[in-house]
Image 1 (cartoon, rainbow, N blue to C red):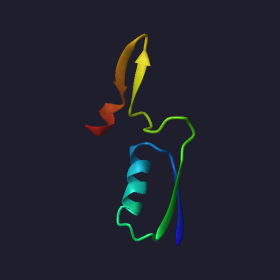
Image 2: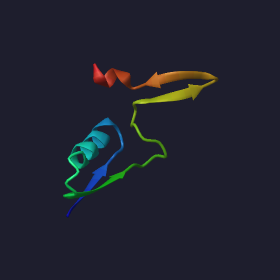
Image 3: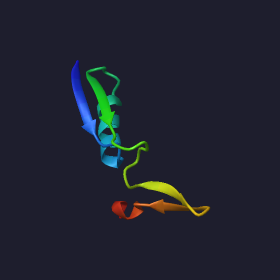
Length: 61
């Protein structure tokens, strides 16, 4: 089994982990490391003064 460490749980890191694991062959032992307590990188919804705002969506255009 190959050990894979992915640094960052943003869209790219999560996609990389998903792609490695989705075939179900068990060939990879994948670990995703994230510095913060939330996943998603800058693509997230924040609550500011009672208002919910989506941040980071511009990265996908």
